[in-house]
Figure 1 (cartoon, rainbow, N blue to C red):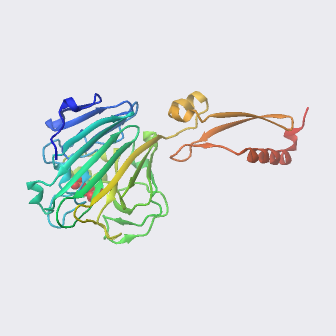
Figure 2: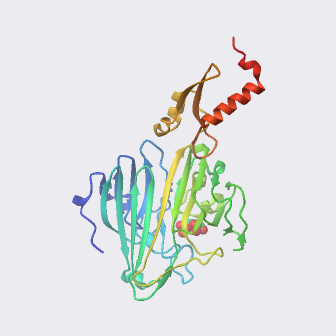
Figure 3: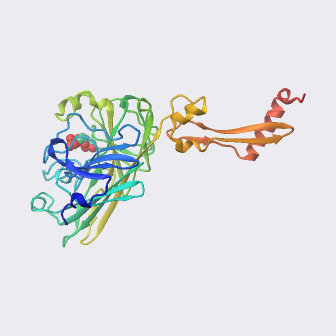
Length: 376
Ligand code: TA6
């Protein structure tokens, strides 16, 4: 795999520098967001949409030491998730390996970094001795996208599992609601590894949580204390993992502050081993596997805006264009129809009625409340 491009090759919005602990990192300062990516593990350590709070959580106690995984951001678990039956490091070797920066460019308002990792003497003598090329493409913008590609460059098939072990930053995990997993069977990794039936309701976090879900669609985390809703979606990933260490486990981890558990939740996407399904990806020689993960967010409503100004302050200008005031004449009455948002879910939806619906509502009210429509 080609050497790291020199600083000269980097676009103006990217700089390469020694980061915490002297670990090499790339700092992205794009028009829509900033980010930090460590070459160790191709680890996205921070992503901050412009004018907003950080979306990824990083422990104040995280190690920034060669060969030790960072505690926070988006660790990439590969070529296995969890414990390695053959005794290799938890969550694989990719998150502590040195990746090379293959490319960095701007694409409109987004900044795109591609990092690469191939088998090495160390990996070939590990419990997973296969020849491979892995690439992680990180797109930094209003949304954060990670795309993993794995190519089998060996002369035999191999299998692997993987996950984006995303640490989301929250206002308070005790008041969040996790949606999108209601219909998914899961495995509670703190209980005997049997399959549990779908809960049928959004998940709330009120204790140590470590679950693998058969993933369906996007997962949302409504975070009233953080006044926003975060959304994690993915393709090529069969599972989602939800993890919060709570009190005791936090205290037991050296690289995790005792009280930090209230401010984070891992919502991970990937294909991980469990009884839910045959997990591993089997890749034949010269074959390639692709998966990607996206993180997005919306402002979380809190109290309904009572003035247009408040609404504008609460929600991104982007939405404001939807505020619609229509005038209609009906039965000699001037009707002002305002389409106004109703912030009840994690996604803001404008409340709109078709003309027919409006006329019907009006007629209904004329019938049920004739006194309100008496002319003169
Ligand atoms: O993804 C959840 C999990 O597997 C938990 O069981 C917990 O161990 C967490 O990952 C952190 O793992 P790490 O190896 O980073 O300490």
